Image 1: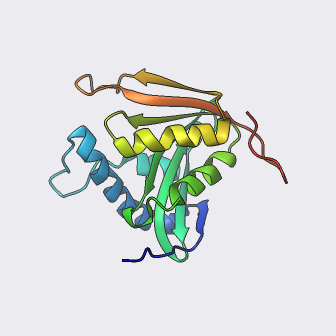
Image 2 (image 1 turned 30 degrees about the vertical axis):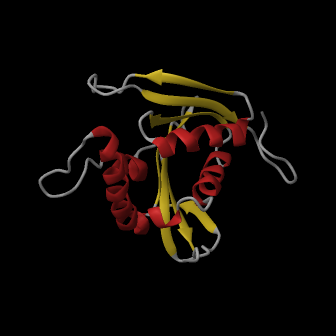
Image 3 (image 1 turned 30 degrees about the horizontal axis):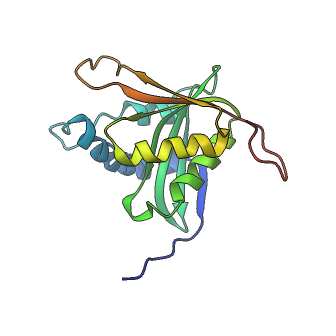
Length: 179
């Protein structure tokens, strides 16, 4: 079996017209996370979606859509754009685009749009996230990043989340991110 070559990933701000697509991708994202948190969908088959609402309507938040050619490949929600630290609130790449560097290219594009301090959380029992997020931190910050365990708010029965903190520098022509 040969691997399908994907077109380059495009990362752009999600618009109101993109919201139905992002909402469908959100369901896939929450389904993936349910394996690590034991969450079940609501009776109507949906998952909590207040972050989708926030990403499209709240000040200090931004939604991004990833595309490979004309096909949706994932999304990211960023919060804290009006504060001292940006937080990658949600990040998702569809299964068909994983392990092809789509996620790494997409997250770089999102992070470098907002230079400054960043925090990214993931679940310690998610092996893909455990491998991916430190690679991202090292890619954008070298060895200048930290890892901290923090309790999940209002969920004391869950293991703590892993939080990575680092700074993304201002990139210019011929320059990478600052350390």
